[in-house]
Image (cartoon, rainbow, N blue to C red; front, side, top):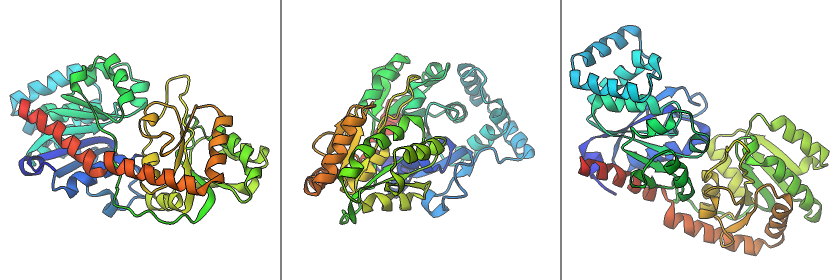
Length: 398
């Protein structure tokens, strides 16, 4: 791991919300950098899920809007005495078409002044959504590069002004190769794009399967996750496998409709809706199951997952995965580590579920192959090293 970042300055994250249950990959990235000795500061625009996530898991962070008006005025005047910083900020404001005026008046000057005292070397953000603007503003005041990690819907369904805001980024990171054409279509040159998969903790044991007949799926209960397709597929195999159970972990707007579909299909207690759970409990459910399934789909409006981290979390625990040919999923999932089927195809998904449930030995073999792949290509350390190389390269080229 490079030591330069930890020795020569702070990596400052400016994000929309932190910590967020559905964005454990952001926490994992911050955690892995800190564990390597890198000074990381996190500024969050929103509250995230802080009420349900302990500080010992998320690590320390700051809330941007929680600044008194007197503090905001004091810090704005501090920056007003630095004309070069003000000129850089005005350029960023023009680039962002004067977006987020409330933060300009309140959170940005205070956050930037605090970070100036930490010798910040780069400002990083995740997603091409709301936080991209304050990240650019803070970086402008500090006179340091801004970088971003893009994921899925943020570039599949880009906002009207995303292209011009990405142009202000010194480097654009994305989580899978299939995302690169979406970025080049937004005007980002190939030379500015780095593909860095979201890493997972590989320092976990492969525990014995508690119940080979249990299959688990994890995600927000939203249309793009394809839970309705999964239920249709499971209804085709449930009667063929005595005791087979599908456990769905997560919550969301589709829950009532999915529970009604379960009743219509006569699945009764064969489907368990576990609701939203803390991260450790979610992973515990994955470990107890014989396999993991995610029936992702791309919606007509372009919304889709890119490469759900939950797939790698299952793979690193030695659990075979079943998923669909959507976006970047085929870059990690194939017949060697699980089953890959067309999206929106309940028959193909049912066939994969049947194979998984029929042959525990083959399922275990694919599960171990999947773990080996993640350990080699997508550990927390590997992803952190790649991020540090991006920032080191920027510094070397300045």
